[in-house]
Image (tube, rainbow, N blue to C red):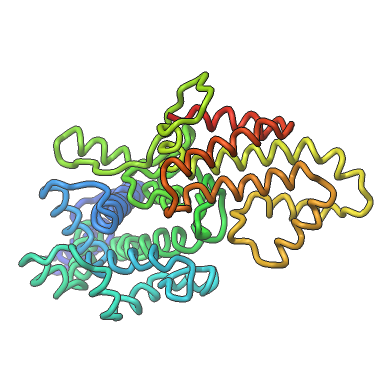
Amino acid sequence: MIHSSIANAILVFLDTGITGLSGWQVFFYTLAVTHITIASVTIYLHRHQAHRALELHAIPSHFFRFWLWLTTGQVTKEWTAIHRKHHAKCDTDEDPHSPVTRGIRKVFWEGAELYRAESKNLETMEKYGRGTPSDWIERHLYTKYSWQGITLLLFLNVALFGAIGITVWAVQMMWVPVMAAGVVNGVGHYWGYRNYDCADAATNIIPFGILIGGEELHNNHHTFASSAKLSSKWYEIDIGWAYIRILETLGLAKVKRRAPAPKFLQGKLVADFDTLQSVIANRYDVMSTYAKSVKHAWKEEMMQLKGMAALESRFLKSSRQLLQREPGTLATPQQQQLTELFQYSKVLETMHHMRVELGVIWERSHCTRDQLLHQLQDWCARAEASGITSLQEFSFRLRSYS
């Protein structure tokens, strides 16, 4: 009788654990804890440690460190160093996890393995891992026994939920490797939309940064890497930023840097030094707006271009995409294609060359402020005298930066 009672108790324990939660309750618990893990990665490891975009009070900082040790076995110095190197060597052969050089399948399915391999590179750890925690608990627990945390988590999950706790644990182990290493580092450099034509291939996967804590807005992040806020358009949601604002309200965080927000002085007739300074500080916004002007010019030219038998639809489609690209990133065959296009459209040729000239203004570090201002004023004068409506409207907006 006693043995039967013990056996029944064991079966009940294996079935529901000490919590006795239903399947749906365990499901929602799993969603909650994996979301906390993602929040820990984006707030603590990414924005706080890797980019120093915000300061964290000791309470949330230590919580995030403990939670990441328990649920991922991730060492702060390793993650930070690898991510900093990713930005320094982005989409080159030295990038630890670029789908541009390693292939999307490799990064998506083996992103965690790429992290582990790079973590053994002592040069990377020394060069890019500076400033990360090195206190007693980091040295004697979180780093020294990094894998013991997830082993403890396995036992806790089984104790709480019974046999299904093993599945909960497996999901927790897969969550960051798939969602962060695979989706963000893989898909986020391969597919999506771009608000800004930054130097690398980073894209925004979707405008709703909820599932991966805001990391879905990867193009925004690579454009303004040191910004604590990853969303930049009104329709974009960065839930990680919402959490940071809550922590800041509670006195547990302090935002250090955000992406610059352009200001305008309507009716401004002449570009001045304030205009120059604002244009340089907001150059990504400037070029994003210019790209829209190119789109408008393209639509106006399409009626004429489509009627030309020498231009195929495939040629026009690919040429449109090339016009949206940063001119300095175009290969020789792509430049030759645009040259061929410009034989049929002087408007598009002017738009393209004026874009190149505009970009040169903030690249000429050897020029004085007076010289740069003169170049900006001359650019606006030629744009407004061009007779191209899209270019004229852009110039009016450019003059109003303040």
